[in-house]
Length: 389
Ligand SMILES: NC(=O)c1ccc[n+]([C@@H]2O[C@H](COP(=O)([O-])OP(=O)(O)OC[C@H]3O[C@@H](n4cnc5c(N)ncnc54)[C@H](O)[C@@H]3O)[C@@H](O)[C@H]2O)c1
Image 1 (cartoon, rainbow, N blue to C red):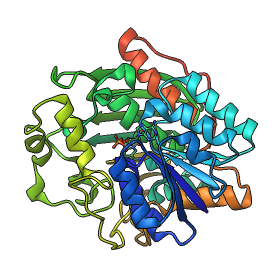
Image 2 (cartoon, rainbow, N blue to C red):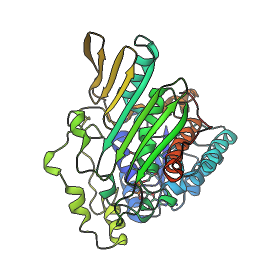
Image 3 (spheres, helix red, strand yellow):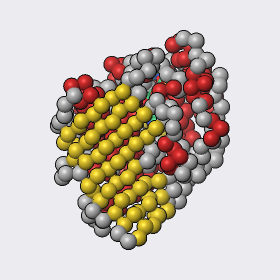
Image 4 (cartoon, protein in one colour):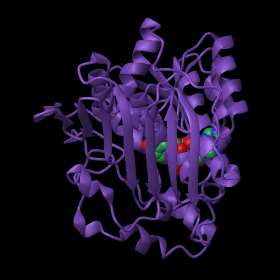
């Protein structure tokens, strides 16, 4: 696959080890307004770069575009790629509004291309394996799902719009996009009620930093999903000490996000601190080319079925059944996020419809927006655009 990249920022920096390790991928072009990032890309890949996503999409040498620009540009950039006949992998969250999601789906259909939204943590192998165990039927039905994640998300360097809910900021737009995607996949996809509270208790970071949501599913299962981006406690200790990317956490790093952020002198300085860590930035260095030791994850997760509780973990799925428990071990991934590339490759080369389609991701966005709405109205919200996996 000849892949074009729209946006050479943090998301691309995180995906780069995947692209470099996957022999099926060639990075064939990029668009970003930042000249240093474009220069780094040309130097690393000898491929053309462009000032605009429109110019990138006009390139004949590109089969698919990875859209990794800020949320507010996802809809326009996906529509440009689709209109140019390019398949699209667009970062989560799909978009900020349902109207934008529908526009993206329509554009992909009109362009005759596949639209995949991700990576989200519902691509993680242990989550997919838990779904297979559920589908096997041996433990009966899913009855309840419990998900939580405690991080310092809100204290990493941010652009101003990442701290403005209207512009797509806060943990509901950015992080519920992962957690809701995971629990929808495990709960059968069809959320039929949402009741939530959100927390915005740090006036210096004026957006939601935490939420707790109770989701009902068609068929009667229910889920509680809690996220804190204000956390001092790090819930990765409950994931055998593996971080979100499957890396070993270093206890000596405790508190480092907050102490580094304390050095930001202004919102502009904070934005520059974020950009400096990105691809081609002054504080960027290439990730070492070592395989991850474990799978990625999005915090502790328990799926309760009639006959067992399943616990997807970075190294396998723990199964707590009647009278016996065991761990179904999973080999460490050959490279991170290979599941995302498998889905994209199958869509582009074999026309296989993706699991993480536009319709799937729109349904996740609908639940995320319902979390915000329910917290505002103090009432249940009823999603209408839900789809099964
Ligand atoms: N899946 C994940 O784990 C993950 C992680 C980080 C970010 N993301 C997602 O990636 C997206 C980008 O977030 P980020 O943290 O990388 O932001 P960022 O600011 O680090 O990077 C955005 C990049 O897009 C570029 N850009 C801005 N406007 C552009 C335009 N009009 N055309 C082309 N490029 C443009 C910027 O110069 C920058 O290089 C968000 O939607 C975010 O949710 C996903």
